[in-house]
Amino acid sequence: MAAQRSYGDEVVVLRTTQLGEADRILTLFGRERGKIRAVARGVRRTTSKMGGRLEPFAVVDAQLYSKNPEDRSRLETVTQAVTVESFTEAIIADFERYAAASAMAESVDEIIDAEPAPLQYALLIQGLRSLAGAERDPLLELGSYLLRSLSLAGWEPSFNECARCGEPGPHARVSFAAGGAVCASCGPSSGATTAAHIDTMRLLWALLAGNWRVALASDAETRADASRIVKAYTNYHLDRPLRSFAAVDEAWRMRGAAGT
Image (cartoon, helix red, strand yellow):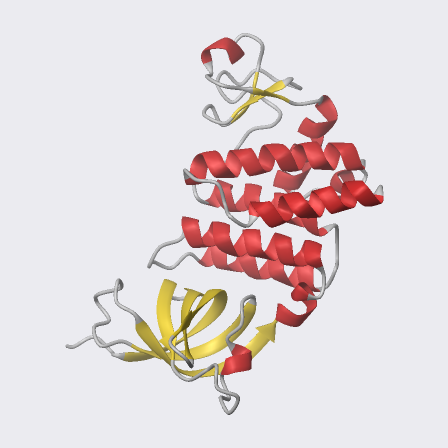
């Protein structure tokens, strides 16, 4: 039986790129299909009914068409889009939320492929919804999201026990290659390491565990230090620096300049 050429999926819009005068190329994260690259024809025209629905951070019920559903490297075509939940307006209204959401979208784009990833999908929806609702510090929200997303991808860090020998912490250094905290004995043989204060280690553990009582009790300096480690850990495992981290760095700079 021939593969179905038209299908529906709930998708998150991760990224958009202009194509020609009226079209867009979309990178989508489908709940059932994983990563999807598709073209949306005519959506940049003022008369388009789909244009406003296919913005980054929007969740839509999309109908798509593929000439060859077995070849996931080919561009598909969005034929219909109905908004399920849009986080776009609330996120882009605040620079910190926008920086955090951009890093979430870029990181998951690097992690997923053209296969279902339901836990990653649920985590992204949860993160975007929290950002849009201004539930917590958006930069802490990003740190928690990245650590948990990397854990789902197989790179779960340890911030209490030594990642190499399991010796109980707290420990004072982090090795990205080893997968987290390393004790004084394992540190010298764990490659490059970075120093981390005990309060930073506690916050990193709380972000990974989703313990917001502990995380929200942290001070500004500890939050900034934890963000430094989370970004470096992410870049190490994704094999490249995320472009959106420039906006995250700017958000931290602006926060520091404001004394918050």
